[in-house]
Image (cartoon, rainbow, N blue to C red):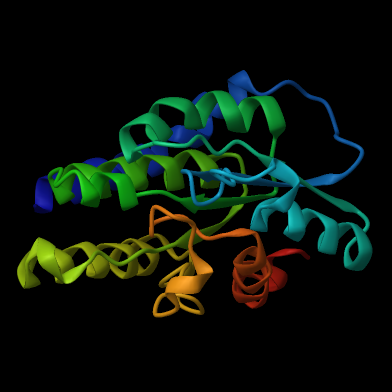
Length: 211
């Protein structure tokens, strides 16, 4: 365990030099929030403009007009996929804030949590390597995955946030988790009306980073 955290720390420290060489010297016209998420952020089953990320983009356009939102979320994405894509995305978009909403698919598939945390640490390191602030959004698992696994899964997000000094929203679905009517027919993905609640839930954690 200690070796893996040392590796994650090394990645976060070594990433800035590599990214500094890769990022072109171009100043974007607006500051950027980059969202790296899974189906919960990719508006699965809905039109993209109905999702909480797009709704957040609309709110930012009104309240923080110098900012824009880029949604690089992919349905079905795991932390492995996010870690593989993160350098390319931050080089392409040069974000000032990176929102990381990944890990749910790892948990639902019962993947090793140490690997998930290592992948998230790499994403945080790459984001901080270009000077971006990070908002880490956590999730919770159904109780049928076992007490030990679900508790370790949830603690992982808080532990990463503390170690790498990120902003944290512990549970994305908190406002709707107990409301079955807020979800689509699969009982996994929020419906259109619930997306406004998710936007409003994320907003207080995101706003302080929009400096």
